[in-house]
Amino acid sequence: MKSSSKKINDGVYWVGVLDWDIRDYHGYKLDGTTYNCYLVFGKDKVALIDNSYPGTFPSLWGKIVDAFEKEGRDLKIDVVIQNHIEIDHSGTLPQIIKKFPELELYCSAQAVNGLKNYFPNLENFTFNIVKTGDTLDLGGKNFTFISAPMLHWPDSMFSLLHENGILFSNDAFGQHLCLSERFSDETSQDLLIRHAKKFYANLVTPSSSMVINKLKELVSTGLVNDVKIIAPSHGQIWRDPSLIINAYSDWASGVCKDKVTFIYDTMHHSTQKMVNAMIEGVLSEDVEVKSYFLHEDERSAAVTDVLDSKAVCIGSPTMMNNPYPSLGDLIYYFNCLSFSKTGKTKKAVVFGSKGWGGGANKKLSADLKEAGFEIFEEYDTLNIPSDEILNECFEIGKKLGQTIKSE
Ligand SMILES: Cc1cc2nc3c(=O)[nH]c(=O)nc-3n(C[C@H](O)[C@H](O)[C@H](O)COP(=O)(O)O)c2cc1C
Image (cartoon, rainbow, N blue to C red):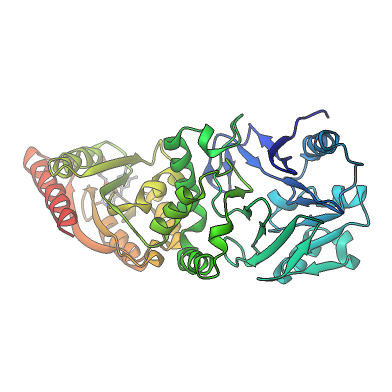
């Protein structure tokens, strides 16, 4: 299939795949994504950095052929640098090896078993195992490898191309975006940061302490000064690396806004009325609010706002002595993400309507505490909230707004 590569720097081409159709990636809702792969042309050797999703080889191959034509070089990949094994970045590796059986494969030690596992044909393949500080020279194109375990899998690593100042960071600093533009500065900054934050919240939050350590390491070794461009494996290429490095530093260290995120569900709208009254209370203190109704909204968007909120308000009716099931799904996900690993504790208000004995609040509070939240208030009411109850909800929201502003 004919497809067009994009030169991103001297001797460096984007040859990735645009997936306009994907809408769900392990529960993460998206409007398409990119599987970024790059070709680096050294005088002696040519390297492919990362691969693409299974089934996308025609689009990847078309761009590889195009890049070689643009460079006027004979079509031969000598090296594959596999920064991460996950199938969206390794799926086309067998087809690349089939085309160039003599190629040298560079990856971390932790990547080897995974790659053999995914691709049994690689059982007897020779892996060049690299770690932080190891180097590779393609002829005037020199790489230093940087191990990056848990950013975002144990095998993950970065590759820094010195002559161009490009850090190939794989998933770190990525965004699930599928756009015709390739660069961060060609993209609406709001859209870009929103999607980088969504990616961080859903995929990187549990590794926040590793993010901080990795950023410190890049600074202390001076390598950060060499980075002019960050080229991740999803989304836009950062031509202003400080923008995303500063954002990662904030997200990883739990920097939050005066902001409250409401997440709730409701069967007959009673809990929803309480939500709206509480929101009015928070807003009366000029504190930012986001609200998600789980009947319609999805958790991967909700947790994006939780990431930089000082507090969450979780509303649920009682159903069969328990919270409404969508809230159970949410709290399970909170447990996976471990927001407290950012070193900051978020406050939580738990509330809702019940028909008789209730039970949702108690269960939600216990689960939220286990997920690392501090319970600020528990509040429930019988059936449809009266005006008096709604006024109390307003006051709870107001008190929450005042408290987080004073922190
Ligand atoms: C299927 C179902 C199961 C319920 N189970 C309980 C229960 O175990 N305990 C309780 O106090 N109320 C129970 N209720 C009553 C609801 O909690 C009550 O109607 C509440 O006001 C609904 O709030 P909502 O309008 O926000 O959905 C149940 C209602 C339904 C429809």
